[in-house]
Amino acid sequence: MRSISLATYLAFKELWRNKGRFLLVSMVIALITLLVLFIAALGEGLGSGNREFISKLDAQLLVYLQKSDYIVSASRLNRGILTRIRRVEGVEAAGPLAASNTAILLPAGKVLKTALLGVEPGQPGEPKVVEGRQLGSDLAREVLLDRNVILRTSIKLGDRITIRSTQGTQDEFYTLTVVGITDKQSYSLAPSIIVPYFTWERIRPKSDAEIQNPTYTVNTIAIRLSDPAEQEAVQARLQAQIDNIEVADLPKAIQNIPGYSAQQSTLQTQAVFTLLIGVLVIGGFFQIQVLQKVAQIGVLKAIGATDPTIGSASILQIVLVTVIGVAIGGGLTFLLSLGFPPTVPIVFDGATSAIAIIALLLIGPIGGVVSVRYAVRIEPLKALRLS
Image (cartoon, rainbow, N blue to C red; front, side, top):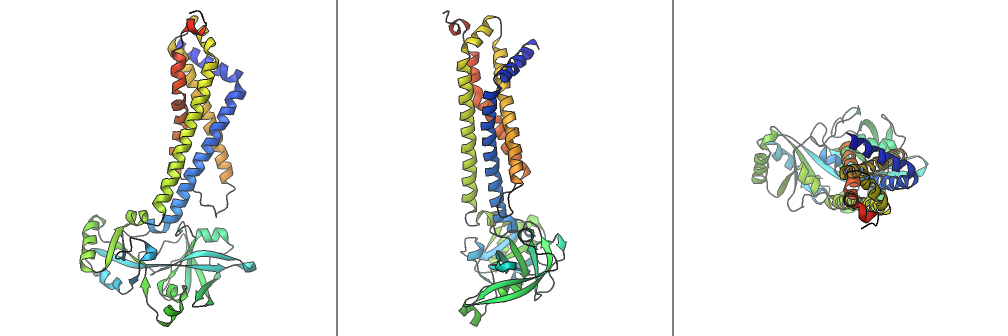
């Protein structure tokens, strides 16, 4: 107990006498914390923006055109295949999902580019609304807006919006009524608007050939199962009974989103290297600290201070400096996050941020291990140059 009290006294005494130096190191840790947390938030934001719509589908399986590599934009299925899929044993419901791009006309000549998604009302693929109501009939000129659209514009529930769409070589304009608002339904990092499938087919951008020879196709079909436990069996039945298709569950579909895996791997690598830099910076600082006070440690040992006392004092200093730095960095991160516009894809997920903070708290002790070991092994007579 006396050893712990002495170690605490020595640690706080040195921190107070050299507060400028230790505060400087805490600020370096704070900047590392800021960088790591923003990299984690950027990774979560980009990942969410890419996978949000698919990950929240009320479905367990997605059907693609064969050899499309499970990429939504590369898949084209005839809408008539829906009837055959719904007859397969184990399929409770199936809904089409068609994706395109469009632009909403805003006041002052501005436009907001969005993803245009076509779904069948009441079927898998139509997201749940948090305000308003779901879509009506297949032909209704109605639209659900992702909350991201609301944040970037002054559009409100019940408003009528104008969509600009290129038909052949001409721009056409369509008016839709906002009947519902969804939350976190971005598609390929773009804010999304969701319309009934036949409305989508009418207003989506088309070439001259598509105008002259209309074809009712969808990109993929979302399937909800009667019993999710039979997922593999239903998947095998679908591929056996229906030609020219391939089936994936949602995790596989997400992993095959173009660029998703590479993007996440890159950001995770950046975060790991930032943590390694933090370990080296902290380790180097405390190693220099120990080298500068070899004589003082020698005196302490000469008058009876034990190795555990010296080691505990060093560890306590490292932990305190790290905690102060992480706390400052966390506070700065929170303050800066309040000023980011909704166009910046940064999401502070609780679990991801907690893991990042725990890792940051560990880099101090890990980086200071060498300096603590060196301090404990100092010989009093050598330190005082008496041997």
